[in-house]
Length: 539
Image 1: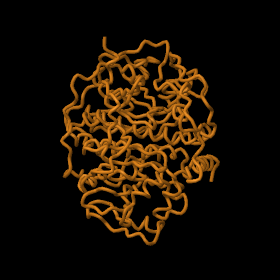
Image 2: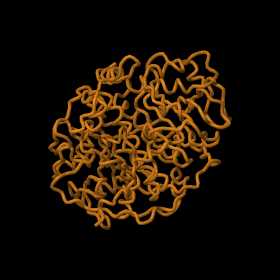
Image 3: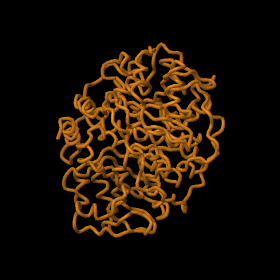
Image 4: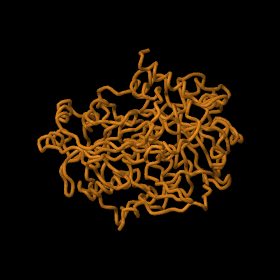
């Protein structure tokens, strides 16, 4: 095993929560040092983007199905709509003298370490260039212009109209609250954002394709990070660059080195704002970030194991797609009552299956590696108990050989890869392993996302991050599914890693649980006021 893989595996092992001790963090909230949730590049005049006066008409199933209609042309209006419905503000919450914003894309602790940058061609209302998106202002900051020759080379390479959307992470935003485990949560958030971009693109008649051949060094060159004077511990670390293109077109999953090299001569403007006065150096995060950097590779194949399997439609929601996106919230508590039907439950699981022609997994991040261990509590028509949902296409005996011998592995339905492991009340177990959080047991169901781990990380250490991205994408699907079916979801990053693995009898790090999620009937806090997302820009 190489040094990079050893470092990544050690980080994961050392940042596990245990019943006897939690992973290291500051242990308190230093509110005076809380990072600014909004990155600005000072010295650049932002270009305000128009807000939607009317949402797209697309119905619920268009979240997943790519439009067969005419794709919208690239313009300031269509790019603005794409950003508003993916990474824009969704509301403000207020209580007493406190006020904070929510966004379309969820974030651990609402801390939002994920930033978005665009590489745009010339289009009506927008100049060609490399831009940073500011959700607070719903605006773009152009950091560099794009010469006509370079624009043509990019267009010729992809063979269609295209712009690029890049995501990056500021680790300090998460480590301020979560300490050493924050690297995990930052990567969850990247996955949420990739899925959010995919859904929003679909509503414009577009698709996104992850450029999985690029290296982190390539991204830093393309987005000007290697020519930016970062404040200490507040740098943006490159994650993924995606091509945004008309649905129905196929594009290369990389950029040639000569195009990347051409960006090195571009001057980049703007000074990143300081996010807090005293960032704390959680050294293990920057160590694992360095050892999990991605080199330039052959692009990952985009194909999955569920091509041709139609979407389950029997529990389709009547809500429009954009409304579902806008009303997504993270539940704080559940009632312990209510629930969902078996058909709704199976539909939610069906939406997490990776399909080549359905958002968000058609972005082509790579082959699926994550399956779901489910704690079923209140699903009408389904016995309470422990279940396993196979997203990765293997037969159940692939998992039977590495789990406890007394598990049933009974199929639930002929057309769904869902298996009952054992029946019984598992509410207390769900609560216990999820850091004693009632939301895991007072829900309709909760789950752990079980990834093929050791082999994946050993073969390619950078794919440690990709595993978390996949779990974040699954989480985003479940968030929207919960809203569509009249309940609510929430991601759970705090869980006791090894006790989770012990429940199905997983004995080593061949598989690891990377993210938890729960869905149920929410209890709203009547003390909170909800305000429109962009009222602060009026007047």
